[in-house]
Image 1 (cartoon, rainbow, N blue to C red):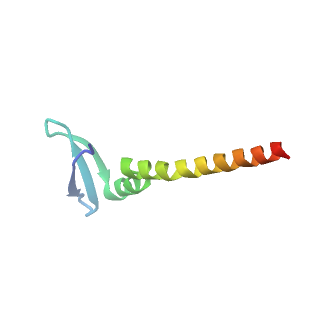
Image 2 (image 1 turned 90 degrees about the horizontal axis):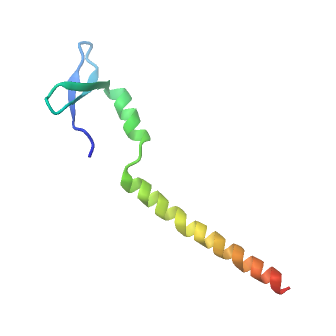
Length: 76
């Protein structure tokens, strides 16, 4: 499960995300810009599973077509 982030502002007015540990102390502080960029680059488990499911049928279809071609070539 993703860690809950607290939104804060720096003295310059930049948006920050702060992650706290179980005792409530700051564990990590990142700028919004850096954190948001990483969130966009990463894919969720659901997105990865969906992408993987799309790839499998294409591979099977290509393999099936390849075996049909080899069978036809052997018959000739």
